[in-house]
Length: 342
Image (cartoon, rainbow, N blue to C red; front, top):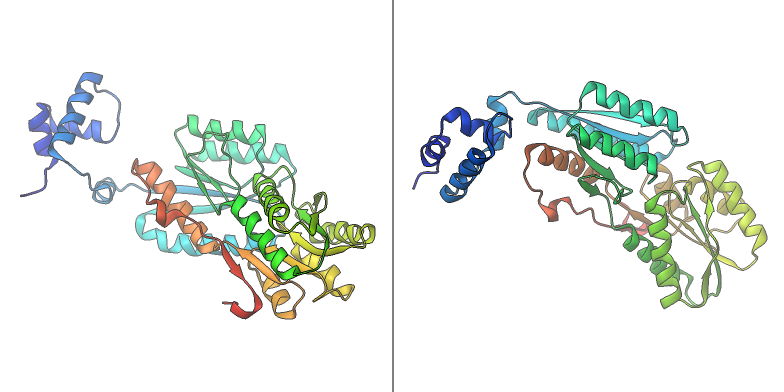
C-alpha cells in the first residue's frame, strides 16, 4: 500500500493543496475549523511528513547560537572546539552555528547579547549560564519570538526553555561522593568542596548529591562549607589553600566545577599528591596531565562532542516540531582515572 500524500489529505479533508500546505507548515490564514479538519484527515490517513524533503524543497536553513560564559575554563575551550566540529557536519543539514561568549558577571553585556540574537533572528539558542531571574526573563523574550531554546550543562527549569542538555548533576555529585569515599578508604576527616558559583544550578545540584551520599555511606567524612572559585584557577588555588590552612584534618578535595588547575597546583606545591584524594569534573588537557601526574585521582566527565551534537539536534527538532529520541540525547556520566585515560 502506497504512503498517503498531501493530495490524499486535501481530498480527504475537502480542501485545496494550498490549505493543506498552510496547515502543515503552521502558517496563518486558515480558519480553526479547517485546521481541525485537515489534522483529522492527517490522523485518519496515517500521514507522516518528510521534514527533510519539505525543508529541502523550501531551501530552509537553520541559524543556531550557542551562548557560553566568557571565562578561561579549559573545558569551555574543549566545548567550543566540539561545537565548531559539530557545525561542520551539520552544514549538510543546512544548519549554521555561531558561538557567542558572554561575560558572566556583566548583566549589561548579557542583555546586549540577547538583544543581538533578537535582531539577527536566529532559529534556536543553546544557553549556558547561571539560573537567575534575569536569565529567566531573557529566555522568555526569545520564546516570545518563537525561538527554540535549550539549557546547556546547567539547567534553567524555571524558565520557558524547551529542553536540557547535560548530565544529571545530582547523580554526578553522588558519583563524586562514592569516588571520594572509596579512594579515602579508612581515613576519617574533612572534605573541602569548591564550586564556580552557588548561583549555578549544576554546582548546587552536585553539592546536594555529594552531601547526600557522603552522609549516608561515608560517615567518617565530613564535607566542609562550600567555597567559590569564581571560574578562576588563581582564586580557586587561594581559597583551597586557605581551607587547608584552616582545617588540618582535610583528607580530600572535591572540585565541582572549573578551577581544577588551582586545586592541583596547591596539591603539587604542598606535596599532597597521594595523601589528599582529589575528584574533579571534565576531561581537559590539564585534568588529563594531572591524572597522569597523580595530583588528582578521578574525573567525572561529560562528552563535549555529545553535548554539542545533542544541543544542535534538539534545536532542529524543536524548529521542525518533531520529537527527540530520548536515549540518543541522554548525556551519560563518564568516570575517568589514570588507568583508563582515552
